[in-house]
Image 1 (tube, rainbow, N blue to C red):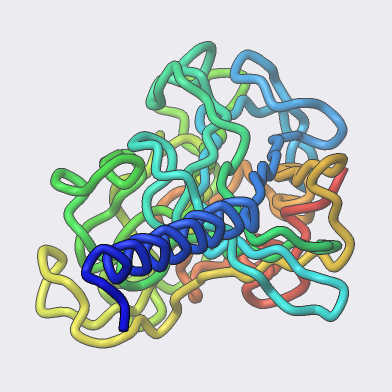
Image 2: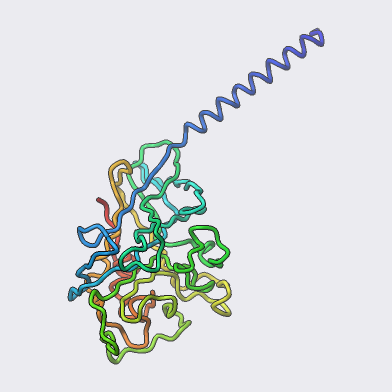
Length: 312
């Protein structure tokens, strides 16, 4: 029979072994995660985006300045060699990333970019389980459970009211605003597309007719539409008819070498950015019955093949 002293020694030794094992387990768990950085860039054709530049955009090409270029991404995953999607846990930095959402911001409040902020952001930072990854997957936009909050009360980066419509519509997943390089004369207006049907506010497939840029420019604001609610100041009671949340997949992606490029010229290819359908907001506010959105929604990957993002 063990003496009380011997029993205490055995108990101490057992506790020490368990403690050491737990410590080893914690170190193994810590070592199982590796840092991940996904780099992004904004370009217009082969040119880097710059708030002070003028670009030939649309079809036919027209000289335009870009006064805003920001978008949200969410649910970032790395793909292993079997095709399994492994989630990236985002760094909660209190500014650019919240939960599973990150803001990419390429305007710097210089030149034509008068509505943004001086700070820019061109990367998503987080961790993932150590592994052999060959691909990338993410969503362009904000998931439903975070999309319909009050931007005045939300944490950063969901607190930018310039990227928010209202509780019913939620956030602008993408905000890109184009302005004519040559200011229009007083009383001059953009060409309108004749014989178009009006876009009724709150229509099932309608876009958002508020919170857009200059009435003489061409704005591209992607967000959810057809979100049933009793009013614009109320959260939707059911999922939106058109979430417009875009899944982007690159089966071959090396985070150490590749950059995800958001390419504006490809987005507006085939769209005449100097005209606007009558009785609709200038540009494309995600309305399915706004013909100014036809090719843009297609090139975002909502109604056709995605062309907005490519790798470099």
